[in-house]
Length: 246
Image 1 (cartoon, rainbow, N blue to C red):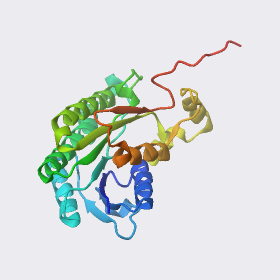
Image 2: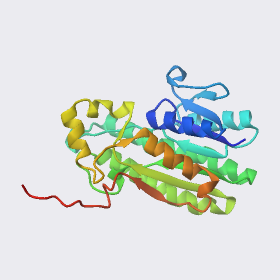
Image 3: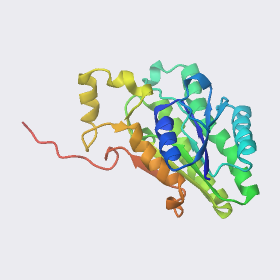
């Protein structure tokens, strides 16, 4: 039976990914800061930990290893936070929280997982999450762009460090997806329409879009894919659609 650890387990993407992996008979360890918010199923291991700290990430991975009898075959680091704010209105506390939630957590989860995979000699897959804001300038995204740009650098560095151990490291860089974290941004039809218009494919993303790509990258079907940051953004970074005049 394949095993996976998912951080940020109460979030929309993590929940959708967990459903996909369960359907493929994976055994799951779900990591969250608040177990009462996780949609766990029978057989799931729920771990309370703050992976924004080294101690929390180490504890989460260690508990999963103990329960599974080996390092998880896959780790999906879905924990994170979105900060959309002008530079001048971003406080030091907001900035540091953004980096802790997105970049520090990715580093500490990777540090807890990758050396264990290397020592076990079993191979594995590590999936991180970036953002379109790391690949193209998006207004009012300075802090999150810094954090996710760091995540993308981390992906390539880890892929180089651990490829000989059979550990694959990749990331998904999504555009705006409809999840509980973004519900307020899509709460009115006017704002939802304006957001959809930014994407060449004419819609915002859904958590299921990320879950579909994530489950592929974690699986052996992606066994020759590593060091990649894959845009999942409806063409936002790659395509400039033709806009016809009135």
